[in-house]
Amino acid sequence: MEVRRSSRRSRTVSAYREGDRTVVLIPARMSEAEEERWVGVMLKKLEAQESRRALGDTDLAERAERLSRQYYQGRARPTSVRWVTNQNARWGSCTPAEGSIRLSHRLQGMPEYVLDYVLLHELAHLLVPGHGPRFWKLLEAYPRTERARGYLEGVAAAGRLPRGAAPPVD
Image (cartoon, rainbow, N blue to C red; front, side, top):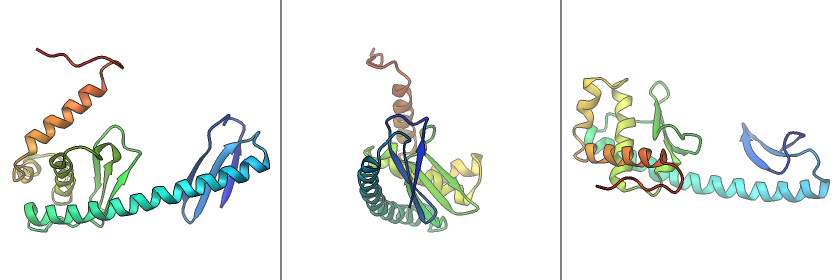
């Protein structure tokens, strides 16, 4: 474990894994007693987060496998499927060369058909790179593609509204 003090950091404390090491970032002015307390708090928080993520990732991988069998005859075989918290500009991403799929945590709590669509979209990238006609032909097999796309477009549009503003209603 490594504690890094920063003079630019005034109040916040954070922790993350860097390979097999845990890094805790704290303000430089923090006392040793505060450091010790915060390290304990952040380690517990990190462990709880990883535990929740591991369970969720297992469920996500099983769901992707089921969807691949149902819509792509099992041909799309990801090596990993996981939730991530660093995707705020897109719903999911896929690295075909690695076989990895990452879904934004913002999808959690959305209707299942929306999650299934995003998973199928990323699974399709394992079979066809890009968004050409062959790619969209694969997604036509999912009957709720247009509905899910509309839902995601609505969520994205609502996110661009000024805080407190309601979307227009005819």
